[in-house]
Length: 357
Image 1 (cartoon, rainbow, N blue to C red):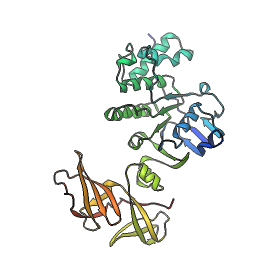
Image 2 (spheres, one colour):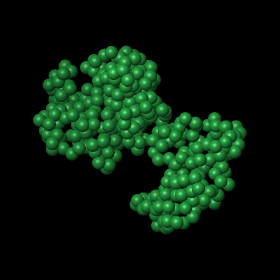
Image 3 (cartoon, rainbow, N blue to C red):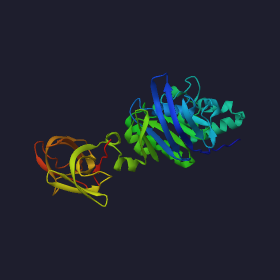
Image 4 (tube, rainbow, N blue to C red):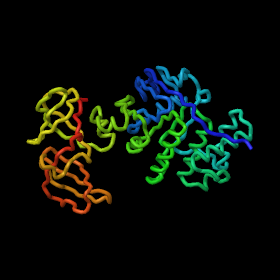
């Protein structure tokens, strides 16, 4: 009996001044530089129409760059067709053949790769085992749940042992609980095999959960690249702050700057934080809902405009002089009543100043 084991053979991906145009007037990707380190999971994140899927498809060879170079490993693949690139892609729609068994679906790409029937079968079974579908080989796709079908699609891509594995919105057809489970499976497999993965999603929580690095895209360009923590804690501008998780944008005044530390004020409340290159005068803060302290000893005044119980926490809409804020609080046993005036402060590492766009 032939035995097989799926191994990773990761390669880096590099974009050098890549632009993609459709026709004369539509710029889908605008002169981007990007480096995906071998063995890392990098997510392209952004709203619809920002260029993330076009970027992914250019790696796959399903779209060709108008200008610039794309390299996988040391090979310039800019003008190579998809069939000549050592990449595999997992689609949003799964793209399984309904008349084929699970094993036949996973084996499909291998049948064109020069493997013997015995080795093809062994590798397909190993792929199913890797995604937790051992014993499902004789079933049809219609006999599987959505999450199981997506795992079959992942196994089909993995068995080809590509240099780069691509995911295009892979979890968007699954319900919330399944999305969490499958994304954890994808991350575990990627880390176990040391795969280079480029992953496209518009879901911020999904990106934060699976990524080594996130590339936030806006208007066909890259807005910011960083680790999930870097993007969450230090967004480069208001767009990134708003797009990566929830953020309150709060007006303030920079009173002083010394040794790259600023003192800001909101009414009579003062707070110290990194100046991020900003000078004295009016500015904007990004403050996460979890980093607003309701009932602080020192702070500015606000009223509870809305209180919502969501099980593990309370969610509050606060009304201050400058506008509304969204805050969360762990105390679900003694919720604050609508209309209550509270003092609101910031966690020590809570807010960040937003550089001017």
